[in-house]
Image (cartoon, rainbow, N blue to C red; front, side, top):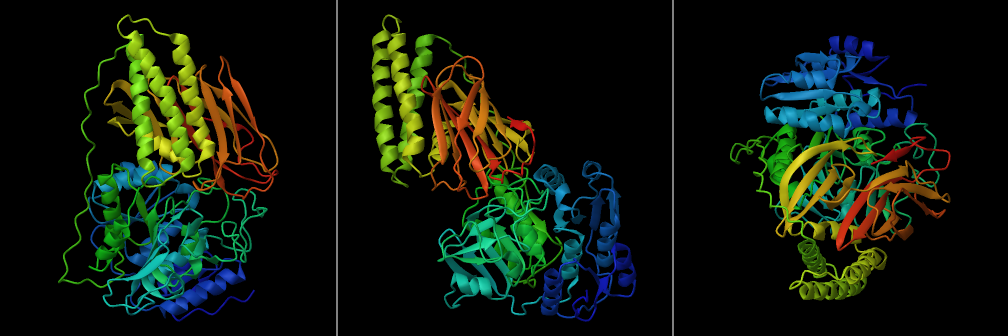
Length: 639
């Protein structure tokens, strides 16, 4: 196959060893991908950046270094040679983090995506951020993609001379110029098709897709969406002419590799997901597809709980237009996340942390120095009181506060179904409080009446999960911690889906010993939330949902109360497609759900909600919808 012609200063290498020979001749090397379309895209992108010129190696900044890990140091050695930086190679990332090097400066970390899971990235971010070291990753779908990213880093001039920047706000469907007073109105279609020095996208989405109002950004690369393990096409998956998330003809579909921007910022949950099986286990991936296209740098969120606001992309734009390098911009994003309690890091950069996309302006204020926040001091635990009357009274009072917090959400998102459920829950709880007031003088409880009313409250609390599509599970989680504050955080076992280390929060209540435990995955979201005094649910569930086949799970743990089990899409605006409610009894409980045949191949959610004596416990995990012949794990996963 004849390879496409490259601009002056670039040449195709026959392998990684040959790339070093080309560098010796002051030529920037590229590796052929074996795919004609990808090779032609490489040539076209480099033509936009222009001929490679300037000295090789490039001049290096103070304390800038390349750190590589694994069995093959050649990519790290290539990057270090081209960029004029010292190269440090370690067998494992753990060994590299044990020797983080001098404080300050920057680290460029070349690695394959399967060595860059969130479980790897969070310790790296934490270690180097603590020493004030800016971090960037050199990676791609494969080695040719990583070498292509290095070639774009080495490009002597930006592809967009005027330095224009734009923001696409998918949450509102609007787009705008950044740092260009008096600029004409910008449509999202124009923002997608125009050339930019920097393009920032703030949108709802996932590692694979972002919703931009009238458009969808799809991370498909190649002829079809394929599984990461077998390479087989996914039935009903994305293709070059159809995106599974945009069945409507009114939505246009675009791909990150087609965006003509030197720097791409993705303020999208889990946008930088590099491990092949961390989210939905297919080749559709926003960040890796962008690296395969025009951007010489991609930065964005590595977790799903970053809780950014519209101010975050504007803060990044302000820094960029002062002339800040990309490492500083990413560190500032992590500083802002630390102020919200995420001290382990929330954003990362694919690209050179020393790169300045915009010229330095001495008349503008210097970017703030990166800093980290400190966890608040632990609160004093409340004493335990175990008298039966006091326990029932506290649980009923906490239920009333939970109902009030749920009711507050109606002011922002009215929902008739939720409103009716709250009225019924309030009636049952108020009747129970009447029984408790009557029992106070004598201490004699009407156990049968209290259990009956608590059961009615539980039925209505679980019924609202099917009465409303307005984010019922999220509303419940938020309301359950409305009267609590964090007492302490501790590490928890890895997530059963993406293997990222979990974080457990011990929440203390204003009511005394009504503490809760919440466990969260940075990628997959809430894992479970339960009263501290209650045994958590243990769930044994299949590793995948297969359309048209029963989904059978086993539940251990509490032996009393009601349990609701739901399978539902990721979107909070879509209802559950399979659900049931059942009584708990001593011993393991087997639950069978009938799965419909017309499911979209995506990463869906399994929710379980346990209600007992005015208390709620929630359990959530991600489960991919996969064809029958494809299963990420032959066993079941436990959490």
